[in-house]
Length: 578
Image (cartoon, rainbow, N blue to C red; front, side, top):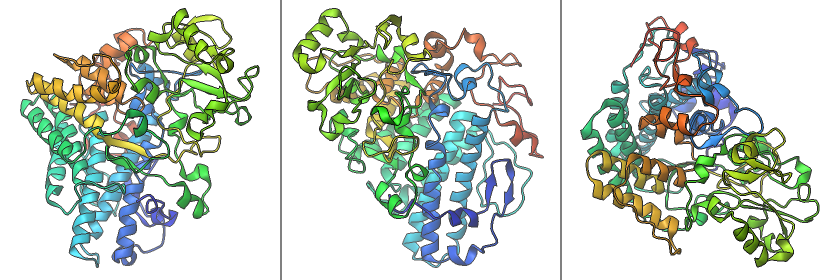
């Protein structure tokens, strides 16, 4: 699948798709006749791969829609890429980030619908038609799930659009959830494999997302039965896996992509096939390693490219406790250099991955809050004085130091204009083979893995009233995290807050936090408590006096629609809608 998802641009031209400026009009962007080609087996396979490739549109566009405006991330040296999504006060139906996300989702739905359209006439074996149709239905359901999480009810477009459509009514969120559930349940009986590492859809992926959709619908529709269904499907997904059989550090090894049994579904990338096709590195990679990271200087300074976007928050740092391997597995706690007298310009950032760490000096050390006392730091230096004597130690604690060695608080270390090297970064997505610059990472973007499935099961069991099973699911995740330590890690009587804490520790940077907080009703509470960019709950109050608990339906989508479309609560246009 890695090789197959690099589809020629001409395929996009052959498809009728929504343009960025028009949510409703179908625009034929080429004089090339598509029917003849897509009705061949090769053409049909290419079309399916194009539908897969469209997933990059929403998951490679930075973490803003998924991570901003939560308790886990601060802005970097400057503002967040879209401050309105982080602070809520300026969030309106005209917001460009929201509009692009909405459009990208519908373009993906159009691509999936196109596969299903040609599945009716393609000259291919019945098994291929059934298999690829199931994949397309899954992809369409995934897009609708993203829309439902962010907007609630949206327009259900179930057919390929090959003519101008101007009237598209908005369906209720109950109808959207029912459609997603029906689609996923219907492809349970398809010839999808149970598991697969090629990047294609599997039954395990179907079960994982059925569990998550039922869980979300249970909260949103106040349906207790849905929580039982969510728990049941989570267990089906887990039954097809091998548990958490590798360490957290190994799970994110940059040289082991596409080998992990824990990974259920990922958007895959492959540098070799891209370069072999003559495509520039930055034109076909992704920017995941740039995110959740400070800017560490130019290409000549030896550190990775960072975007100063979504810096790990003080709140997140204090969730980590002694013995939890996820701290070292998530963050780059040591930055290496070749000259300790000039640490900022002689970096060897990828030393831990490339085998040169033992030969390098440690330029910056970011110990966790529980290893940040003077005695802790002195003991750490004494372990290797040659390579650590001149290290700048910046504790990931409330009281820390600026890289210029002046005392400051954590938030200032993260956000001050010249705070290069002020806060450590997420390393889970690092690509040692990448060139300096944006979108040069070729690591897979993991969308679903068993570590999350266990936590979905925990939340579902808790909401279904089974405290014992909820505790069990959480502690399976914690066992892997604390494996090999002497720390007592077991929790009993877990609550929603404890599960959200565990999701923060386990899933940092995996584009899930905003939806987690919205689903569980914690969006306002956690932002007010832990997001320094907010003044109070008033940030969430819209011009209609209601809270902004969903994203706004883009104003352009409303204006271009001849159907009467109600706006979400908290926003200025239209009437309130559920």
